[in-house]
Length: 111
Image (cartoon, rainbow, N blue to C red; front, side):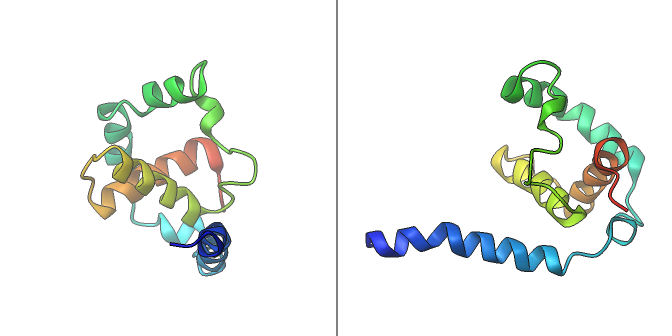
C-alpha cells in the first residue's frame, strides 16, 4: 500500500463513524429491550472495571466519556463491541447491547 493511500485511511474511518452516528437511533430505542441484569452480570464476570483501571489508572472511571469520542448511544455500543472483539470475549450481540445499556444508565445517560 502506498503512502498516499495510508494517509486517507483515518479520514475514511472518521467519515464512516460520522455516517454511523447520523443513523444511530436514540438510546431509548437502541436499549429498549436490553436485559440490564444480564449486562450487570457480564460487566462483573468479565472484570470490566479492573481492565479500565489498568488502562486509565485510579478506579478506571476516567474511561467513561473520553472527550469527543463517545457522544451517542451507537458509539457507546460500538466501544463495547470493540472490547468484545479486542479481548475475544465472544459476546452475543444482545449481550453487547445489555452491557452498553448498563453503561448508558450508570455513566452516559444518553436520551
